[in-house]
Length: 353
Image (cartoon, rainbow, N blue to C red):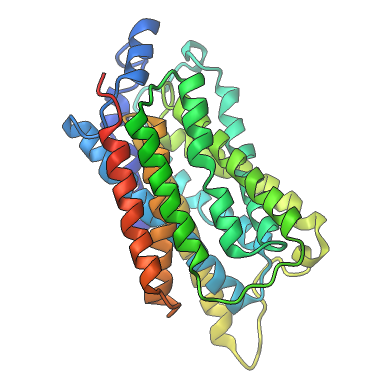
């Protein structure tokens, strides 16, 4: 329940922001809509300051994904895709509850929507593809390479945001993105754990594919936010991704054979812990993390948001240090500072007009 309430606050801003910003509540011309998308300053107004806070909460939330996924897999002997399936399946009740709690008194006339509601199905497909490629990448390449290449999404979003959404990027923004990505490179390459890669070339291809899947999902959510509430987008996305991931799980034997956490008579507590970690995986990264990110995208440039989300590996490294006792060396701390510098530069390079 707490996860649902927190997420509702983030993605709906107590149910008011999404309604007052909605095109059907305050109609705008196509010209006005175009200006809104290309002339956003991340922290110039209170609404955008709140969106910036939501984006940071989202970055922290999704940083827990690897933590809870690892803990649930270890406790319940689950496969990676099975864990991803439960992340979405267990998030569904929270999104549906939030939909009921924030149901408008007057139902929307979807026939008047500027964007065909069928497009709401696409983010779920893209996110499921992202999850499938992401987990496949890590079964062939190292975590360091996979993390680094997956974060190429910042440049894909930047290019497509400029080309499709007409969001302007100047040299300072580009420099900030490069500096932040350089910090990510330093962070993951200085991981002291010894890693084995069965097929690095194949794994790296899947990791790059992950970047394209997530960048496409990110841009699609940004576009849909012109006409739909964050909660509507996230509910449909989670539902579609749940179905697709379930089909993937039942097709792959090693995942199908371990669809639920393994119960061991000698260690019953591990079974309970596995379900707790799966529920936390659904609430924190999916409901709160992705929910806050989706809500913030209506008020922040997608290119800037993509750079800010490079904080996710930084937060993940520190959380791994605190929760899993994974060593964090001096170079990784320096790298975290470099990422922050890059984000500040990207913010300064985000045009206000």
